Amino acid sequence: MKKIIPNFLLVIFAALVFTACSNDVPERAEDINKQTILVFMPWSGSASNTGLYNIFLQNLDSIESAIKKDKGLKGRVMVFISKSTSVSDLYEIKYTNGVITHVPVKSYSGNSYTTAAGITEIINDVKTNAYALNYAMMVGCHGSGWTYKEDWVNYPINAKRHSSVYDMSQAKASPYSNQSSTAYPMTRFFGSVDDMSYATNVTTFAEGIQNSGLKMQFIQFDDCYMANIETAYELRNATNFLIASTSEVMDLGVPYHTIWKSLATAIPSYDGAVKAFDTFYRAYKYPYGALSAIDCRKVEALAATMKQINTHYTLPDSLVDSVQVLDGFNPAIFYDMGNYVDHQCKNANLLDEFHSRLDAVVPNKSTTDQLYSYLYWNPIIFDVKHYSGITISDPSRNSVAIKGRQKTGWWQATH
Image 1 (spheres, rainbow, N blue to C red):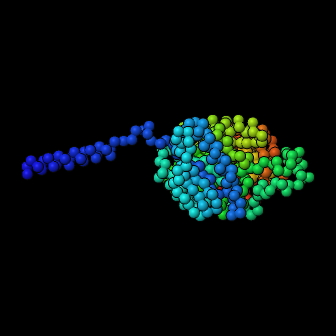
Image 2 (cartoon, rainbow, N blue to C red):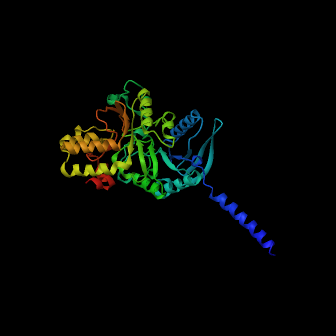
Image 3 (tube, one colour):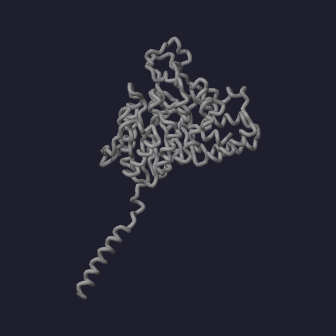
């Protein structure tokens, strides 16, 4: 027995040591996935129309063409896309030897993707299936800025109607009056607000991300009117950077085949993405586009300065119409923030402090000389004379802004 017991114990000890060593050996840092991007494309239409679904498929083709061009992925890419009002899929894009494949992960029923719990579930599924050191989102869906869907009564959805019924005799304000009615280009508002059952408030979106325990590396909105200070402030605990447009986005959306390389990397180049967007749209047949990279980590410092300004200064009603408008709403909702404060603040030192902090919040921005809107029957083009890369709704006379802005975290922090 004296001989057998030590040998038996030796075998057990060796097994334990081997097991412990196997479990304790750390992964090599270079083997850990640095970035997972979730392309989030919930339903944008209604029960009777497909909204932006077909355009989303084009966007995904553009992403995949960029992956092929780069001959691979530097991280992992998960896609959530709704194929109807009640059927959605999550899959992973894979690249092997020049071939793109889709690996199914999960299917979802219903429209819980409009709720905080549903958004959290999707992000948790991404974490489980594509772990990374950093996560980011590219969002194509409803683009109504910070406004609350419940505050809208008659949303300007004429942009969704068939342009073939457009009365050319009323096109005097249209930049395309010498073209056929079918030539009017649509924007990302097409189909995106047809049924508020499939809309999502920014507050809900932020809550869903935060409840997942993540803070995104960046969130890029391929939607109209998302580069506003109210949205940036609401998302400050959900993402480091917000990439979005102050204005309407053409229905083509973001040119992923040109900006993908700048964003799909462990260290994104926001400047590169903004410049690539600008270069594309200046050469596009409809040369209208604005994009900004907003540092949400710095919005609280800007809010502190804005509170000082609001404490001492109010923009006179007589000057509201002098502020640069960056939307097509009537009355306007989204005003250029820098130009607004230039009209409001009369203290030079305070104004300098504001612009210093504004520049820190919006380090990268671009706009074409003119921007386009197709919210109502008359599509319009307007000149961009002042552009700080982010908007504010404080001076708006629009009933939706009046009803909603005091509910925003931004307003409560600055008034």
